[in-house]
Amino acid sequence: MAWTRDEMAARAARELQDGFYVNLGIGIPTLVSNHIPPGMSVTLQSENGMLGMGPFPLSDEVDADLINAGKQTITELPSSSYFSSSDSFAMVRGGHINLSILGAMQVAQNGDLANWMVPGKMVKGMGGAMDLVAGVKRVVVVMEHCEKSGAPKLLKACTLPLTGARVVDLVITDLAVFAVDKAAETLKLLELADGVTLDHLRDRTEARFVA
Amino acid sequence: MSRKTVATAAEALDGLLFDGMTIMAGGFGLCGIPENLIAALRAHGVRNLTVISNNCGVDGFGLGLLLENGQIRKMISSYVGENKLFEKLYLSGELELEFNPQGTLAERIRAGGAGIPAFYTKTGYGTLIAEGKETRSFNGEHYIMETALTADLSIVKAWKGDTAGNLVYRKTARNFNPMMATAGRACVVEVEHLVEPGQIDPDHIHTPSIYVDRIFQGAVFEKRIERVTTREPEQGAV
Image 1 (cartoon, each protein chain N blue to C red):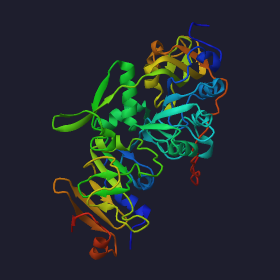
Image 2: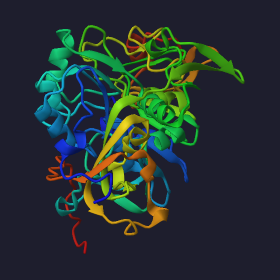
Image 3: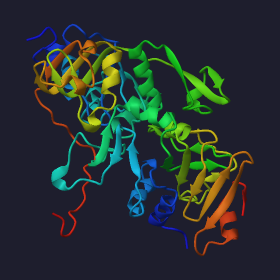
């Protein structure tokens, strides 16, 4: 039926290309690094100031000075480099990062993205998300198709405050994959998860999409 | 001892603190924070602070120590999700908060230290962040104007420094520290290793001495980690 978190991450990994510099958000996007095809060279950027993120450390390799943007301990690779936060976001804003894969609370049919605050509740902050969606060449969202309440997350217009306007290029959910046609303000259905019918998808999607 | 070196965090802050001041504090999460200077700020009790820092520490460590002591009036940050007390003080109106996108925050500080009063960025165009800000189009793309940030004092953590004030950071503990070193009217630095001039290769210096007013070797570096995440050794790996 629906795709698992790991299957969604595997689908997102198919957006990677050899030589890409990529920023992965927290949550399902982090799992994408487990699906980089063997032989493909992909460099992961961590916006707190590192290119070339390695795997989690062994217990005796843990270093307080070496964390990712999710504040987890990580390791370096022979090709890694470190830099300041302003250099990091120069890379991001300057269009040097090929791909940003991140989570979302809502995506609209025109590519609007909301993932940083719910008014009236505690606001945790946008961190680097606004910079990433504004500056990275291609933005891929990986998220559950609906909220836990069943409410759709793919909408005609976002109801939550935006992280970026007209920024999303591709949406991967547990039910389907959509490309965003920003000019036409319409989603284009590219793939359905195994066993998911078009009717099932239509019931759970508020945004306009063409099959 | 050179003109810039002092023995302790308290001595480094002597005469620089006043209620209502603005302080920039380096670090990302708990990584690369000036923990000795934060402890000295708490001991001093200076109040009504505006603090510019990407995060606000955690409950009981980092800037969380100043928060629980009621010393912070306003935070300028990009992400504060780790701190329960922060949430409580913010929702009760006891703490003011200004969110900046992380890259905008970094660039505002860089601009502040570089004598650039404002700049244009795509980040946040069409969002709440753009409200009340000047917008302008360049080559058909929309940008918002962001202004520079400076502070009365910047507190910085480096890995190694010499007594002249040249600094080297280590791994991802660099983060906001280099820009903040340039944007405080006074800049005070704590290092893990204080060495004599000549012991750092001039080609390897990240922050040149001109930005640094006082420097000392920290007494204690707890270097707490927020999320220790490890992997298991692979079978047969050497």
